[in-house]
Image 1 (cartoon, rainbow, N blue to C red):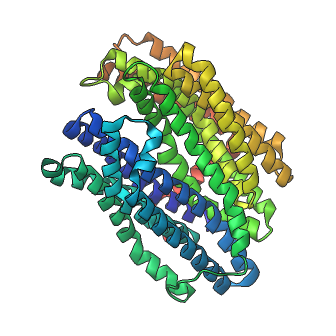
Image 2 (cartoon, rainbow, N blue to C red):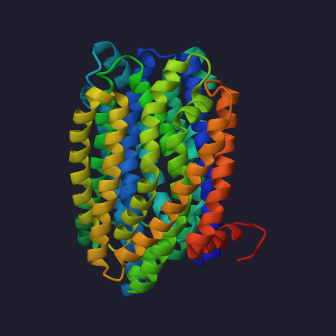
Image 3 (cartoon, rainbow, N blue to C red):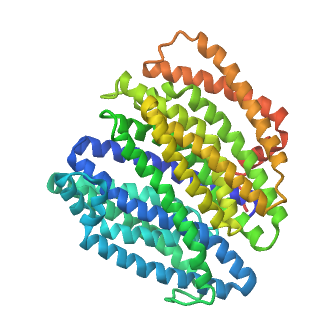
Length: 516
């Protein structure tokens, strides 16, 4: 896959990522407007967490393993053997999904028990989870389709599944809320999962013809080694969900509304990853995996270094903007209706720390995927275990003095610790990666960002606008973004010319009018 193809694929993924996020916000607005903040909506959120957690873990494991495994098997034993291995993996996962879905449908109370919701809300959540149980299996199949399609460079269908899922929930609520109440939302979840499968199935069938058509298989000579590789990857993914759960658990011990404020801040803090990080690395990961599979480590390291430079150019200014403009961003995004100035303040405090973590999240995710491309899942699991334990300890340390902002600070610190650990692991496995060269590259971009941010604050301090109102906050952000962005571009051209040239080349290749 060429740089131009990577850029085009990134543009497609970015477009659908933006649409999915917009629909996700619309979904939350509709749910709040139709059902309000009640025991029913609490039950829906927890039941949906169970379904989405299983789907998220499975998607992470499949996309992390299937792409490098297929590339390596095809390189070593041919395309037919690679497809045979994929069918064997799909066969066992499909059977496991059927069993898990049956258990959830029959015994939903067991899975809801972990939330300690009280008898009334637990009964509602159990019934909703029973309705959503088919969505668990359908999202699992969608995850398999996503991994197999990405193996073959098909990104449009997998990128659109979030749009389909949110659209299904909206349809269920709009059409059925009057007659079914909160159960309509649960049926909407199942409908959304069905739309995910329907969206990818035609393309999956076309791609599968290259492997001799659809097959049911449960054996392959290397299936056992794949299962061994999957254990640490699955463990790492499950551990990543632990911190999401503990954040909710600790925030629930604070005053009413603090848990929601943390959730809103987290949604804003994770937006750059959804819109910018995933679109770039989704098509880039198969390319790096192919380099490692073909023992072309020097080319793989060069691709990593160039990607790290582009990610720094994007993430560092975003980190600084979200840190210094957290209050204004929260005001523009949520400062209306029942979210008054106190509400905005509760959101902006954790948002500032989530903003600091954007740079670390971008580089850390690239390191994670590069280690995965080299089949070093054990190192990822070790780094994740250490980070999860560290985060929980920091949560307990900062929760008292900083409340929900302390939980965000703990996450930010843990992100950079995890990035440092995975970087050390990657360097140890790939000595071709020079830590000094990477540090100089990131340092040059960071210097440009800090100087640009300091200059941007000069006119911002002189603005007489009221940043507590929407338009005042919007104007403040516009001035800071324009001045800071212009200065950053000028400095980046001088301090980081190679990274700036790579980014400019990628942008120029986003045109869909050009032929491959």
